Figure: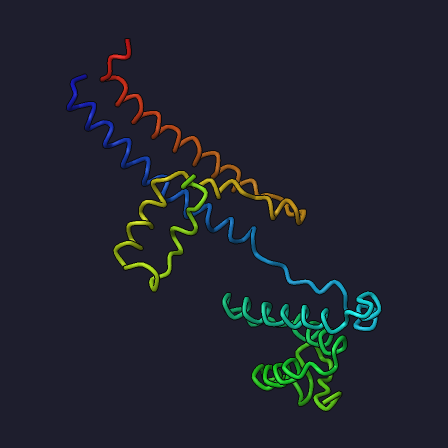
Amino acid sequence: MNKKSIAVLLLLVWSAGFAGIWRLQHSIDARLAILHEEQDEVLLHSGKMVKILSLEYAPLMADVYWTRVVQYYGSKGERREQNLDSLWPLLDLATTLDPSLLPAYRFGIDISCRSAPRRRGASRSGHRVDTTRHS
Amino acid sequence: MAGLFISEMRNLSGSRVGPHTQVFFSWISYLLPNFENFNVMAAAAHGKAVPGMLILHNTAYAILYCGIVLAVASAVFSRRNLK
């Protein structure tokens, strides 16, 4: 084989190979996105229990849960997902741990109004949103 | 090393770099080997099963990439006198 034919063959292998790589990469990206999809789970639902477990650091834990609320809502918005089932338990935990956490109440009221609950004063999960508590 | 930062290359924000640079890095990201394809640590840590098709596609990716690199390397080194 002369140099020219080797160069042509190499160019063909190179272009066909990277076209294949391009397609494979898109397929792998789609599968990895499904695999890395977060599953939102609130493992501890009892605010009282978390309060006992956090000892005298309940307000700090409330801040952690409040940060988690913001991250949860932000990630849902980024992924354009409508399901906010874990929002209520997270907000409830944050406000139980620190009853004076006003931004959490304001955020909860705002979201409850925006997400058009099934009945007035009820969240999607069916819990009553007590907006007057500790305010 | 560059193969470990493929997603950063693809997600370069338009506010930080120009559009031409963005396109350039997007192309480069397909030419470099993407080692992040093989990273399933998070899934394994959460007990999630790695899909068979992902393993198959990753294997095909590795074989294809190695084939291209070997073809180019053999063409380059065939002209050289290594004696």
